Image: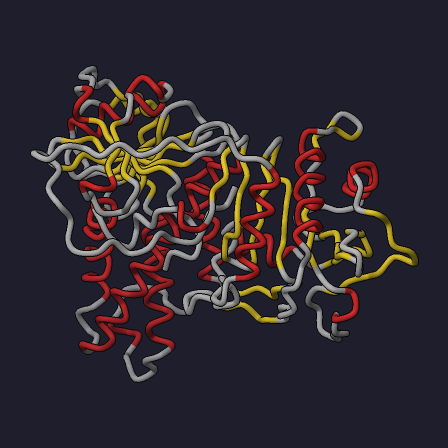
Length: 453
């Protein structure tokens, strides 16, 4: 499922990991729907929960009445969890809920979302939810729920025109603007997988007994080794666009290139998650090495379209610049749509067994690649990092054999090839990044994929 919110920024600079003892992290306990309810309750009571990132544009119709009984939240989470394990006509239930007060819904005449109330209210029970789920599709509609004075949760309507929010949340479109509604949203993403968020802000995700909150996700694209590797391609692209710009515009191009580059990488990972097939891709310097690429090809449309979009946005703020100085069709209508299509093209390549190989500028070298590295990283050289930076306090030894063959082959490759970053998505949707730092193979789990720039 989509993942977002970041960990706190680490204090100080990265610390060498070669000569110091490693601190073991405590084991995470098995989590229940009640734990997810507690996470929602804590978010509701937090004084910062309504703050939106400057990087995300959300038209706010959000309700500020946050007095939701804890008993209602427990009922909500327990019922959703049971529904996720149930089937209706042989299919697992998929549904999105919006927790929204029926007495505080404003009538709108525009084409954005609207709530259509039922003539009567229905108790929020497992039978009622599983039946109504068939009348709603998370891609364009949601079920409206709320609580009564006694804390009893009820279903009171359907919300249409939710597809813009669905597509933005899952990065199916480049636009990051959507019309938020209700206090928070909750969805069933798969069996035993409940996802709760408010706009782009993660509140909590319960996935097969594991509870993840915003602080559990790591923004590897803001700082640390993964960011540094991506920065090589980002600066290379920005340098081609900058010669005819003034210094302020050059800085703007670099910032816009970084945002578009990271967004493209995150979108590919998110789409691999939605396939539920598992997949992997590699960002590296082109070279002859331990790869057998079964389907070699040169696909640079993602890079070229990314350049055009960056240039187009920059020139919109600098109308005095002569477009003839650029050998690029920057006035192309629908540039963002072409970029979305190129990202989809790359993501779909991952459905062929093997990995997608990309250069530092996100140009595709081929797909269906087989890793031929046979050297297994020494047991004392493999670690899980709990921060984007490779700091001593955030490292935990990781058992190489604990992960599957797709992860193991990527770990072997990254260990032998410095300056390379691999992204692996398992069949259950977990996303990991990995790279080698100072002779240590570092794996980042729970990487942040939304609202990262």
